[in-house]
Length: 231
Image (cartoon, rainbow, N blue to C red; front, side, top):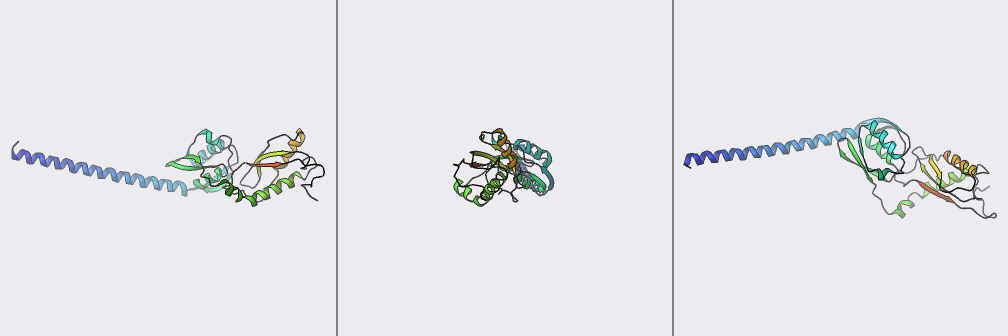
């Protein structure tokens, strides 16, 4: 290879190196633009307030309704949602706010996985003894309201039977989906207790971070025991 050919070869090599460098910069710039667009699109999704009217229901059905209304894709394992119920979402909210309300009390939270998609994950928890103590005041009002409702009728009046029940408290401050964990021994009384629970309203919403459902047990007492219903 003579001197002219060597110079020509070196010039071509420099041009190729420069082209590769320019291509790398362009790719990096495109990646930055794509990232910015994704962030802007996600911000737009979060900031857009829309009207929701999703009642409390099994979580899978609620998520389907939320996906249709919000145009967001819902990704989750069915094992995470099995047996869980959503909270009511009614009003005008951003998508993120609505989803947090819907998942309130389920023990789940969400992470965005793309511009229009999110996935469900177990919520981060703290010391359970501390978390329970934080809700003592609210749970005390729940217990008082339930007892007051049961004391309204001789058929449901506590004391003569053992009662274990489980229920959810919706965003409207009402008991939802009550069920007895054991029979009181009388079918008519079981039905009357369930009906009484459905009418209980607390006048306040449950704390969003409080675990649900709530389990409550009333023990049967001896005939001379203190009357739980009081005078």
